[in-house]
Length: 323
Image (cartoon, rainbow, N blue to C red; front, side, top):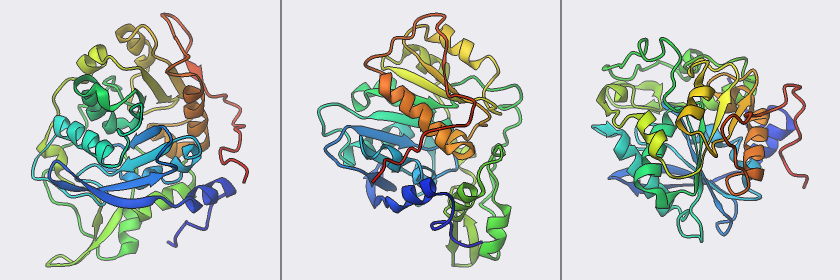
């Protein structure tokens, strides 16, 4: 498999041409990988990826917001190029995220950043929203929120074994899969993410492994409960759901409105599965742009209001501004 940096359609190539500032910061005793785009003087947009992913999941998304925001992404400890830990906790991840926001300057401006968190990333983001609300002005939760589809929790296996090691780079890439499976994600996106999800290692087990701590889930303290956090968080919260999500329950939107009956917009991206930004990147950007253009300052969605929805026509504007 060859590099996809020069492949894919124009919007994808243009996005990757906006190369991020790559760096590291210290957070909770670990070295954390960071990526940043845009003018540090602009309002902040903080991107938090899902479980077993990494900051480069945002590399073809973040540049589309860099004309208006200082965009920062990072890899959670135990994932990407960040350090691994002996033990993990949701509270620890929340403190880690706030430390990254502080170290990258997102908390230096007149207003704290908007956080946008996918899947697992939503859990520590909600802890931050409840316990450290001064670190964020609003929170967008992407296909997360404590409303799992039947069987999702019961069928999740917490591995205790070490990461598998593959003899060659090609073998590792051939074994790469999204969990749950993507829904016809563009091949150029899938390949880009896969290439940045593996690492070569030496020592007594030379070969290639995944860029995440394979057994972290068995060493993770998952408290507190997400529904309690959602009910008590006193910052504006919005949701973006995949229209064909494999993770969220069919009635998730209704349950969200019961728990947070006011000022909680819900956007749905048709045909997208759990990995919304992977399955339909441009539709995802359109959904986020729709939220950011009218929320949180201007939008008030009351009880019974219809959720936002991206048009199902598949005709989306070019998200890369004309040069």
